[in-house]
Image (cartoon, rainbow, N blue to C red):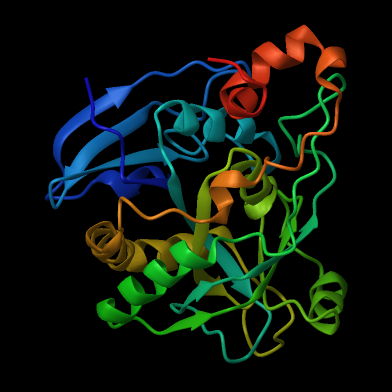
Length: 290
């Protein structure tokens, strides 16, 4: 058995190689949306249980568009997880956001077009509010933990999610800058929206690895550049996660946990039984189900 995780971390498979992670267990989870990217690792940091999920699979086998985002979020929800921090790489579209810095975004622009963006399909319709997609309360905890680590960070940024797996052209990169976008990545969407549908708190620790391709004085972004920066920041990310775990108030609640309260639109008599079965974990409290 395991205790309900105080926090779940979605990121690279190396993140859970903490020297002080104790009582480690690996849990295989199946969901109505398939298997998650990897087994879920649960261990204790500062005597609090923490869950880790490798977004791209063990060994990085899933490209951004083929990550089983719905299965990942549903699997964590089924384990009782209420709070998720995403650890990801990003490119900077601003001079002041330099490689090695950490960004805690507050907005996202979904520029993807191939991904399943919702748990809800024909037979059960829901429209969540996504005006402020990241949880402010959990982002506050992340900011405090980041500040204590001594890292250079920025709170509040507009993150664009592109389809990938290729990097941007210079024309695209410069256009995103004109749009007022601050950082660029490939995985925030639909992850951030699925967590809102699952009524979970979600924040992002984005590590700046490069200047994308807009900055003519810099080499264009490459895989080697990203890996070098992420490896250099691995200990920093682990320190921040450990700091976060100690600062989470397990008894606190926020509006994220009632995101579906007024979002379900389908008349209960017309809900497709198959859809109801698939999404029961998410909606049962609003439909009088045990």
